[in-house]
Amino acid sequence: MAVTHFNPTCSKPRLHSSQLSFLSRTLPIHRHCSFAPLHRTQHARISCSVAPNEVQVPAVTTLDPKGKAECYGVFCLTYDLRAEEETRSWKKLINIAVSGAAGMIANHLLFKLASGEVFGPDQPVALKLLGSERSIQALEGVAMELEDSLFPLLREVSIGIDPYEVFQDAEWALLIGAKPRGPGMERADLLDINGQIYAAQGRALNAVASRNVKVIVVGNPCNTNALICLKNAPNIPAKNFHALTRLDENRAKCQLALKAGVFYDKVSNVTIWGNHSTTQVPDFLNAKIDGLPVKEVVKDHRWLEEEFTEKVQKRGGALIQKWGRSSAASTSVSIVDAIRSLVTPTPEGDWFSSGVYSNGNPYGIAEGIVFSMPCRSKGDGDYELVKDVIFDDYLRQRIKKTEAELLAEKRCVAHLTGEGIAVCDLPGDTMLPGEM
Image (cartoon, rainbow, N blue to C red; front, side):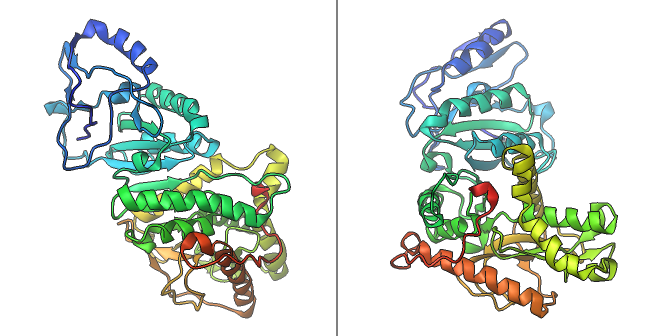
């Protein structure tokens, strides 16, 4: 049962059901409910219980908006389930923090999270939305749309601009917000600007999030941002940090399915190795189509080595040329896929791609970087690296190239990871087109 915490000094007027329509119209206008995150050891709270003809609500007061997470509108009234509504199917509330929550990717993602599509039809969720001072009104608009969608599983929504407030007790942190690359901006500058954002968010997660929080970094350059984030959160297991490469995997499956003339559910065991950049390596050597090795089904090996690889690497740019903007809906779908891969058991014999910390990997890849590799999960939020993969000279050569790029990025952000003075000796510009 989810309970929103309110200031214990507020009064508790009792309203009849005839007054509820007025309340629902006026509450959203008062942005600053007397809501403040409390430590678990504090017990001051008000629970509002639904009765046939009346409801208890907290008094609405104003607070300084800067840095405060705010409950929003109807979500300021978190109801206890009536006794007859309580069933064993309802689970403990999950706290999900989302940064960049006013952006296009989040606009698709949040409604999937709230609907039960991600964590299941019996899993209540609380959404904690992080934005900036500039986006606070947009966050209110997002909260209004979530209100109007009447999701029964969405028990709480809070909005704020301070990660130390928004990340309180978060069990999942989906870090989407990042500065896009502007005209004339050097790649090293983008690494530094976004790296500072993710260093700050890592420190906030380290201070206030659940000790077993799962973190998925979407904002680019996501591999190195994830590395910076985990280095600034030493109290959270490094294994809990992921960089999103699932969209690249999905794109690779699509291209293989098209070439083989099958539906994409026949394509399995696809790995994206390395960085989320144009050095990424979509692995067709270990991939399968209808249970058979891809190279036995697709006889055009030159297509696999050249056209297939390039199509996957540059798919984002092709989409921008057609659509006029970078992918948002498909990115949100891939975030959902990435979460599901961790909370549901991996199908027997298959695996999925995720950018994870490379320490202890069985492939000979350099340690100390976030590198996309094949993973399996038992559905408990954890994963293990797949050992039964094969390599040839072609695959190893390309993995070395993307590894070198990530090591160079790591040196370029050493000042943000606590590893000394930054030295930017980056190779050729391989940023994905969507970052330009």
